Every structure is written in structure tokens, then in C-alpha cells.
Length: 239
Image (cartoon, rainbow, N blue to C red; front, side):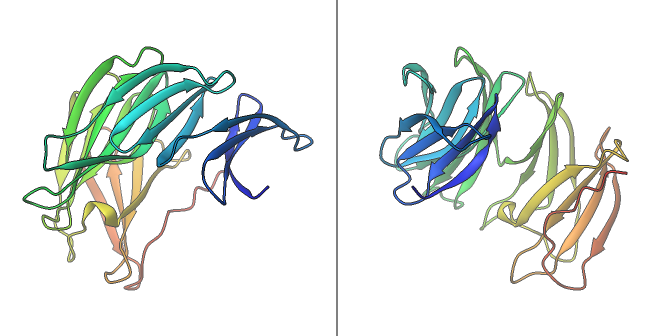
């Protein structure tokens, strides 16, 4: 079969079918033998496995099912009022919390993104939605997001308590080119410098930047233009 790997979880390698995108496989990473197969519904998106549970989106619906027995555990409808259309586009799981990023389209101001957090085991909503929130990274204690849409670009950077959704800090800055949310590429917390967050942004039509923030309060430490080229993910180097 043709598949691309999603990662190793609980001793199994998970891979998504690369041809029809309708199957998820669990393989023994030692010998490549398929241990289990999950047949997905049409239109599924953003699959992720954590603690034996498969989470994925179909349109505006968020599902949690047991991978082995393919039994439903919980389901959440994240749709918006008509005529808006919502799509679950990114799912992250950290410390028994599921973070769902939803893109909302057909709005007066253009597409925008929001984030909602759920208990990974029960599906109970913990907090959200946080509007204009594009997930950049999640740590044990915080979730970091960027704000902005194609029609209302901004350079806003927010940190929320990972478990309560309380806003820890909000920062906005004004580089020479204000990025939209989709321009933000990544965020990485370098282990050698645990007090600093490094973010890169840029696209094919704009200059690339790398920005450094203080973890504690979001203070902008510096921003550097990368030779007017697209800035991709910073590289984590461990000594």
C-alpha cells in the first residue's frame, strides 16, 4: 500500500493512506507489519492518535473513536450559523486536552480561525472558542496563537492558559509587512534558551522574518529580516 507516516504513538507507527485518504494504519515499527486498520468516513481531516484514541474532523464535526475497536467515544458539532461554513482543519492533543482549530468561511470580513478546547476522554468543552486564533504551538502550560485573516491582516500574538483558556498575554507589533495568520509558519521553544520563543513567518510574496519573544510576557526581543526571503521553521539545535 502507499501511505505516509503520521508518527509513532504508544509503540505503534501510524500512517495515513496516500491514495484515497480513507484508511489509517497502525504498524509495528520494528518489522512494518500492519496491526490494525481504521476505515475513515469520506471527507475526514486532520487525524491524530493519542492514548489509543483517534481524533479527526469531518466538515465542522469533531470525532473521538477507539482505534482498535472503531467505537465512537464522543462527538462535537463545531458548525457556525448559516451562511457561514466551518471546517475542522487542525487537531492537537496535549495532556488529555484536545485543541481543535476551526476555519470559518463566508463571513463579512473573510475567513477566520478559532480554537476550542475539549477534555480528551469525555469531550466536555473546557474553553473557547477563541476567535482569530491560529495554533502555533502548545506546551504543558500554555497555547500560543497568531491572529489575522486574509482581509484583516495583523501581527497579533497571544498566549492562553492551556487548561482554562485564560489570556496570559497579548502582543501586537508592526513589522514592515503585516502577516496574515496563514503567513505564520511555526514557533519553537529552544531547550537551550527556555525563556524565549522563536517564530518565523513569511510567504512567497513577502519578506521572511524571524521574531523572538519572552515566554513570560510576550515582550518582543528582536525581529530579523531573512535577506528578503521566505523564513521557514527555525531549526532546534541541542548541545
